[in-house]
Image (cartoon, rainbow, N blue to C red; front, side, top):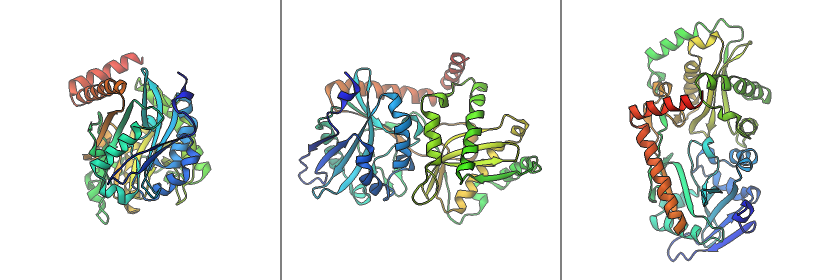
Length: 397
């Protein structure tokens, strides 16, 4: 079956009898432009993560989604007065003969979430979620499985309503730092650690033009992107890892998102750099929404300047920058790398849901769930984790 056959027409609608439930009907859209007004209005309520911004995901859709033979399946749920209650930014693809709907963004999003109308999210019940799933099941667009991975249990001050559905812990954790407004710098990073980093930084400070910078102009962003896409493949080869940034569309997506301005200021992806006149020494990039900074990708120089821990020095600057801007949290992305634990002492609870909508999808959902549980078990078992890392290194020599 061709991908074009996955969705029968640009807009498909299904009425949902809701009784006392507040979701009255669903609509599924293929075109991001058709969904843009609703999307941006819900985005403004900020009950979604910055990974669900229209500007971020439209860049992903243009450069990556089409290369992966996926089609948008943007589901909008409305009340009886046609007011949008939530938007699910999904893509639909074939996986082992089964139609699977996943959140847009693929592996480039740390967190996946619907965009919620805040008042509805605050009072949503299991009956509301059941109405949503039943409505999706009744859409003309057949979906066998909803594979909703890496969902935060809470976002800011509210529970994620999707946590009311059957779920399991995600395979990987996400290291998290809580920032307390007005707290002294030593609460974020201990004085002893700061002194160690300052000692290392003294070796870098004599470099001509040494500075920390948040890239703000197109020229600064391009310079840092150029440095990243030059150095990162060398770092990954050094670690015997595949260069995921060489996959089709990835570089174009990241460059586009880094350059895309947001209405309220900033860019869809913000880049922080430690640099001197001769080179960009270290780079961290991520998404920010006024409350949370979430790191996406990073690298550091191949020169002798790497001896002085420029990545850790840059991380200290980033943490202080967002604390001074009034942010309340910061995360370093999925994974348990040692450097993350130097800064983040807790984890963001994240979960997966594999929800079958058809008989065929039931077996697929069981398989997906079991595989994710096995991955989590390996990652939580040190001996198995070391063996998996060794095997991965051997396979990519």
